[in-house]
Length: 240
Ligand code: UDP
Image (tube, rainbow, N blue to C red; front, side):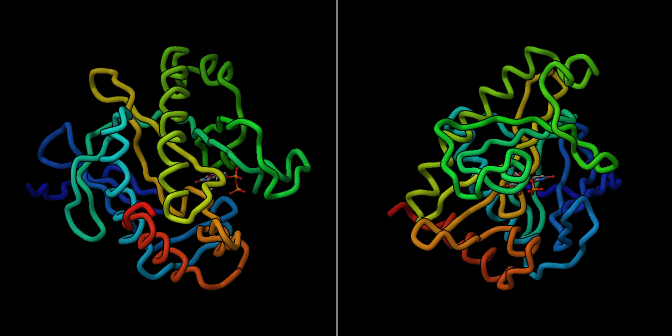
């Protein structure tokens, strides 16, 4: 089934969200635009929109089958997907298996240090503030989410973690960390929204520790397009 795009509801750094004739559904269009350091660094990554759309469309139905409700309905075109309309909860959820990025800096823990258990962190989704780290009390006190929603979000984030770690390991990839966003449907159900892609995860090659994600862009490592294309190949490959 197709869903023709209506009014542009929201434009973010990497995606556009359009209304459709059905108020319960949106169309998400993935862009090639890449930003880092809170929008200070900007570029286009050729083919990124189609790759991130395809990776998300491959993973979300499998997460759904593993018991994680998601907003994904179907792929519409190389760069578009049909999704259930949600109200995004403005709390970004980061799950970490290995120290990297802001965690390494903040705590002076060498990048690559294995964490003895997954660490779930929360940030306030605000470009203006640079997505500051918060805790769940802050999110409740400021009315961004209820305690029940936050406990469901944590449970779902750990279910995503439990699915993704072995999934990537079976494809020669270490999942270092990742960021999730959740939304609510009209009836209040909390579902996984946004994307799971090399823009929102750190992926290291299991053999070489080579970075295969947006850090290649953030850190000017080169080979950005090739790394994204290789991640699509691995995500869609059978387990080995
Ligand atoms: N991340 C994201 N969007 C953000 C911030 C982080 O998708 O606005 C992802 C990032 O790609 C990484 C994980 O969340 O996989 C943890 O990022 P970190 O807090 O280390 O931030 P960074 O070092 O990217 O600033």
